[in-house]
Image (cartoon, rainbow, N blue to C red; front, side, top):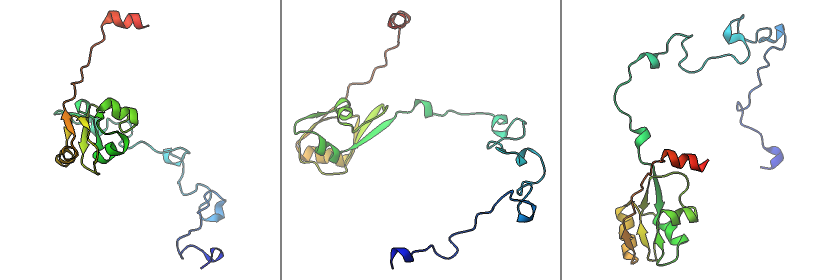
Length: 165
């Protein structure tokens, strides 16, 4: 087999249907869209769930119950093997140091340490949660654990908002 002998499998390539190429082309004139109407126009079509202007079903049905989506905690996960690669022995590993070395990006409420990888250095780990295997590996390497300070959300006072502008 050589490059100049390569070709696609039989049936893998199809001839492109040429729409609107004259009446005798088989798909000419209206190009298979019928006569007039919304679906015959360019850029036609409606969004999913559109019912012609009638109140759609998803808005007619009652909304019940509670959805925790807006109030959930956003977790970031880090593996112990990543810590071993990026931190020196005896270092304190917390959210600020993880963000500094690029292991955690974007908004997050809490961080969990998972046990994927090997650890040979000892760390002082300050995470919200630690898996069982990660705890065993850190302790085996001589590391310790601490509790993170709780995040506090300070409300902005009206007089503080005016002084910032």
